[in-house]
Length: 462
Ligand code: PFF
Image (cartoon, rainbow, N blue to C red; front, side):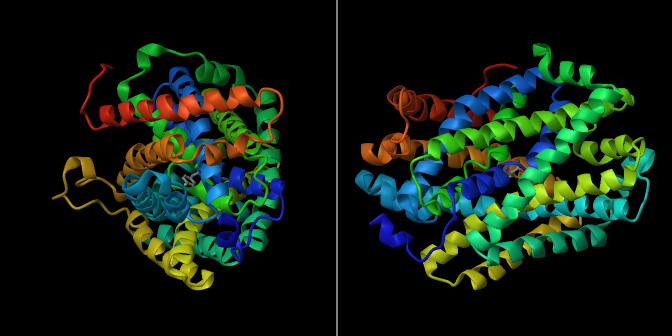
């Protein structure tokens, strides 16, 4: 049945192409911009440790769950869940609608602010191309940019146009082709920067900051942030991996591919952190500088390098590329939903939904605040960008992940559930039973605890 539903939807040309696309979705602003600044804000090592644990016992099992559901279901997130949870009756249908609805909402909201931050990277790229030595003044330049609505909105518009363009071209000709070029280049440039800071100093201190845990700095909020970030950085909880998995022709290696994607994502985040904190420490800057960290610190490194403006341009171009390969996956979840559920042609679905997201994004670009009459939990009076980031990362994605874990662990047939592991030789059986245990018990319970703690229903002390 799933085969007929897959026909005519297009798909990845190869398993490797799928891997680049999935890795392209995972690796993005979350790794280069967000991971370093939240690690700085939460004091380093202990936060990194919790984040790594979250990746391992929550992220990875969920990544498998999403890929298996997508590959088996062969449709958008709602359709795939609905088909595969039929055995669970009404509960399955309700869960599918809830998870599907939340996924589409998360896609709209995340991409709206993501494109604004990516737009800032486009601006920094253009400044570097223009030969501007950002150096010491980068912090002020960034501050001025964030405060300038029309300029932020213009770059946001350009970035959304690029995202829409790729998605209109479909899976093989658009998403796969783009990611196959973008991802290896990104790894190359980041490696060069890492080698450079290894010679110019600060790397030792940076690694100590990242890997020496100081548990006195670990608060309950840090745990919530770490879990949320594990979702965000691996693109989990809103059906990206379900959607990409549905375009995969070969189901034999979803587990292996998922592992490499998670590993690559984690390594790239740690590399980005190592580079950025090396610059922070060798220039006496603040590790806890917040969202401006990437934009304010790295230009200082580039300024001291031979051909600095060029390196700076190359780097910010890569930030844009990394963001683009993630942005297209966010849009694709929404587009696949419209195409598969309502039969709207891809072009029309992409343009329509792209326009809606662009419009929502203007609120972040212009630095607007949420209406003051809203309760504090919904960001009343706070900046739209921060509120959407918080709401989606800390709540919507983990909640979506919880539903997906319940579906995979409890509602799928045994055959569907174990399909992703069938090609594993050797200890495949052990892996299936460990994964089943994690996705049934550990992952959902951990997510639930952290969400309840986040909304203040339980308190396990700071
Ligand atoms: N994983 C991306 C990043 O780390 O930048 C962001 C992202 C993409 C989040 C897709 C969620 C998502 F569904």
